[in-house]
Length: 417
Image (cartoon, rainbow, N blue to C red):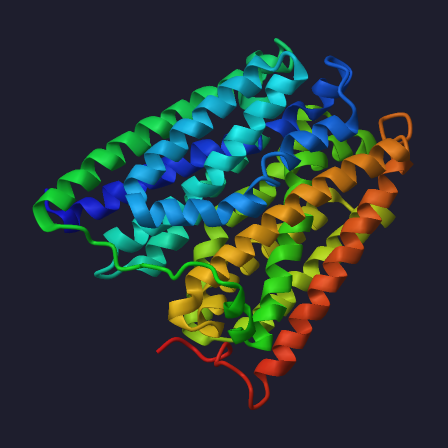
């Protein structure tokens, strides 16, 4: 089979590789209540498990990019997938707690580099065409991992019946499948290189502090949105949402997982359509305002009303479909091509700082205000924090939209040529 025909099977391998690791990252939320009730973990300890998977990448996201440039996307994908598997196994071993934290640390370091390496791989294999569609499908299929993790208490009920540790071993097994997919990808990529030579077309410049002065004000607006949206969405949905639904809304573990999973389920199908809509009709800054505005509304509905949960879930699902589909191509329009590597590296660094920091902050608030099934009101400070941060993100998006309407705009609202 020729490389041009192999690119779609390769995309499937890349999607499997990232989906298994997305599952493992989100495997903490379904067992959060059991970690608390069976293992005696505090809310702060639970928050630490996901925070430690993000905080190291405040520095290492840039290091990972350098290694990808030096050794190639396929080799970096294989090495990163192997590191993720080792980390997931240590997380499942779990005892003592320091081993579990070390596992999540190794997993987080590997997952960040894996994601960047797989995206670089897509850019190489689809350099001749179809890259936008390929990346949309890649992200959509990646959400399958998160969705499957959220509903795992339903389809893997027998495993959950064994306590909090067997579900973590299941997650470790899925990272092993991801490693197999990354290995096959490496073999195919090496064969292609031998037959046609390296196909990489993306060689980002190294990060330099002086590059920051070259970025336009519009970039800093979209940068703020990118960082704050991730800082709100992932700590809530991937760490505390299921326990919150159980304690504050009275749902069972299975029902809480189902509610949380619908956000990712919607994104699986809606993200490519949102990207296609933006390409066809433009209006990217307006779409970002719409997607961001839904986030504080979601937390208001959850924290201050008794509205049916499907409403807040639907709003968050729309937001999670619109923003990722629009924000990355919009960023590429705001930054000179030779500085995209610096821009994306900076975004990844601050995203990880935000995700890690707000995981710790949310866990600390829940502990300080004694959040739990006997005191669901203790979750209110966490919900208020997430709501206020999302309002700051909305303000940045509105400023971006206003700027794009004036003479300093960058064509975000124009349809693709």
